[in-house]
Image 1 (spheres, rainbow over the protein chains, first blue to last red):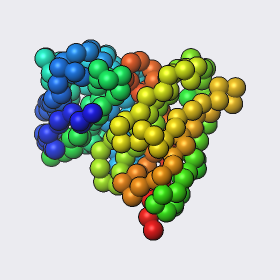
Image 2 (cartoon, rainbow over the protein chains, first blue to last red):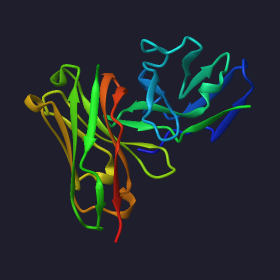
Image 3 (cartoon, rainbow over the protein chains, first blue to last red):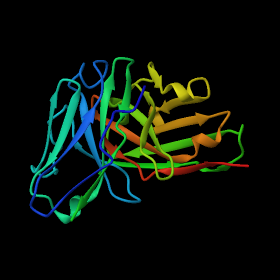
Image 4 (cartoon, rainbow over the protein chains, first blue to last red):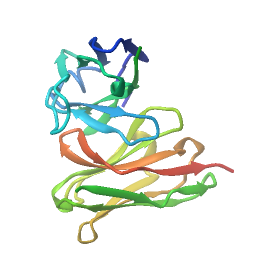
Length: 110
Length: 118
């Protein structure tokens, strides 16, 4: 049950695109199309942004998109906005019938 | 509107026990898996435990197996986490969350802080 690996931080200017990677193994990310992404602002509860690798819940802007290749999932934020500055976590279902979160990535809007 | 409200957190000594509760409203509670996720101060999210709709399946992260017990009372729309033999490293904000898809927790409570310290 090791955490999925994410970069500690990524940054971009308003309007640019940033991509956050989430690397797991063939027992979690690589095995299932059950990857979700969460946004967390300081002092707040996490918010679901993407599920089933690339699906967006109602109300999430379409500039948030998800994908997966092999053991690595990715979240792309296009047209970066100031309010996107937050911590982002990936999560995957795992072969041990558990869920595992990523290490988290801080997105900074320059 | 979906609401999840946690309670029961507080300060406890190492080796002590605490029971967290999560009151759910705004959805059909017995239709969904529920989970507890924690976040140590300044750290990332950690999945702790999940429970099936009827309570027949319970899953735990290795670090809490044998010490924590997740349960639910569907008629009361409530989720619980009984935490025994608490350790300093269990100090965290504990969130309850509702599954809206596999490994997708679509609704979260505001969290309750558990501090394990002597």
